Amino acid sequence: MSVRGPGTIAALCLRCLVVLAVVNVAGLGIAAVAMGKGQTGSGLMVALVYLPYALLVAIVPIGVVGFPAGLLTAHLLADERREWVHVLVFALVGGVLSVALFAWWGVLGLAGWSWVVAFAEGVVGAGGARWWTGRAHARKVRWSDAQGGALPWGRIGA
Image 1 (cartoon, one colour):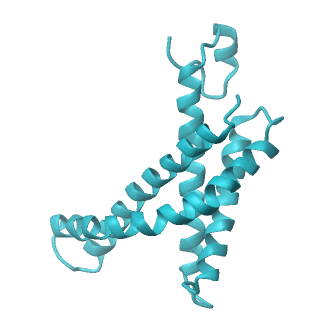
Image 2 (tube, rainbow, N blue to C red):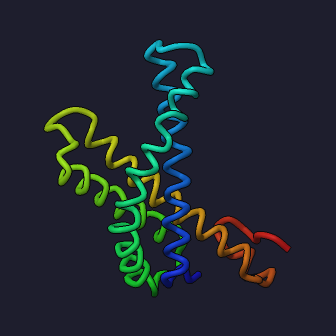
Image 3 (cartoon, rainbow, N blue to C red):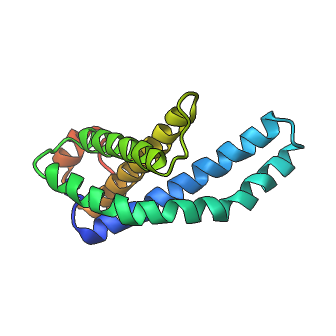
C-alpha cells in the first residue's frame, strides 16, 4: 500500500499531533493523580491546562523536522509492501528524531528517564500516526476479497 506524497505525509503529521495530544493529556492526568495533586477530575484539568502548551511545543518540530523526515522515510520505503515494516520504521525514526531534538534543545539530562520518555514520545507519535494513516488509506482503497483476506488485519470495509 502506498502512503506517500506531500499531502499524505502532511495528514500523517497532523495525526501525529493528535496522537501526541491524546497520549500526553492522558499521561499528564495520570501523573497528576499519581502524585496526589488532587482528585481524578483535577488531574484531568491539569492535563487540559498543559494541552495548548504541549501542542505548541509539538507542532513546530513535527512540521519542520517530521514532515521532511516523513517524506524521506516514505520514499525510502516505497518498495516495501509490508505495512508493519512501515509502522516500525516510522516509529524508530520518530523516536530517534525526538531524542535528537530534545538533546539539541538541552532538555534531556545526562541520566534518568528523560531519554526514554523522549524516545517513547517519538515512537508513539510517529508510529501511531503511520499506523492510523495506513488504516485510513486502506479504508479508501477498494480491495477484492482475495486481496483483503491476504492483509495482516483482514479485509476492511465493504
